Length: 382
Image 1 (cartoon, rainbow, N blue to C red):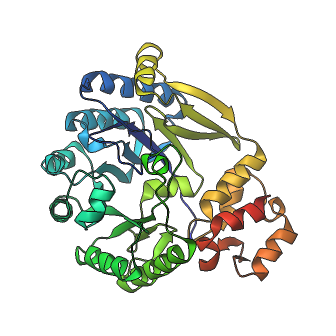
Image 2: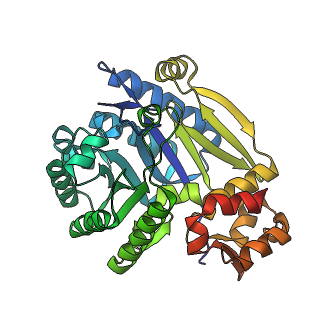
């Protein structure tokens, strides 16, 4: 594995959506009247607070997530990015991503977002099937989804879109056709997620049944085969990209590197002298806004992570990646040896089962291991 360069990301959380989808458990809210100027001031105050202790970092990525950040006024995005550029040095290949939905009202703003500084767009397509979109509670139809992707491809050099599969009753043939259609749009990055029924969602309340394990496994294997053939192999369990088109910001998370979380409910990680702190903001948007305005910080708690918790977090995230976790990178992050951090008997058992490899100082989950990663990690880290 090539040496992993130091990275530092900034996540900006916009908590508002036009509608709450029934499968969504993110910190998103529907609100009619939003004072964009007030929110901008709050974001800038929180950025300035953290810049006081991280001004020596080189920012490599910014990610506007939500919620639906494409509902933000482009001027708000432009002003946030200008402030980040004033407070920190930014890398030459600075990646700036915004999530967007395919509704026509948002599509009309794509050019404005590009001019505001966004250089990578991630579109929440979810499906190119009208019936599936209706089931998922989306506000766009399949025609709008196709048009949004085609329009964005003309404006942004880097583009990704999401699809959800393993919907109730979805057959392998249907998913194969859906992936084939997605690939006709020639994306460089696709995020492909199996539908999970999360507690607290409308789907959970309505007792919508997730796909059974056998169907989920078959659909996952179809996904890997088609994406590999199309030149978009998985670099993470649910994310596929052509070479060099991986999400640099998400790699910050998966590689266990530091990042700031700005906005309601956002999380962050900051490390000094191998001691990492977990930062969590107040979740409720109104409360965060009030705190950020009055105190310059909407923080709920900031606590040190123990060595064992840090090990677990790095492996929980890093083994999602096909590159795995190198011993050198682990030492850079923690100052400790990866092999001595692991139970060798449990590791050997997982290697014997074909779920894990530890060769050339790189710990990896095999394809079979990534398919059942939760169980693999539970055994390795218990």
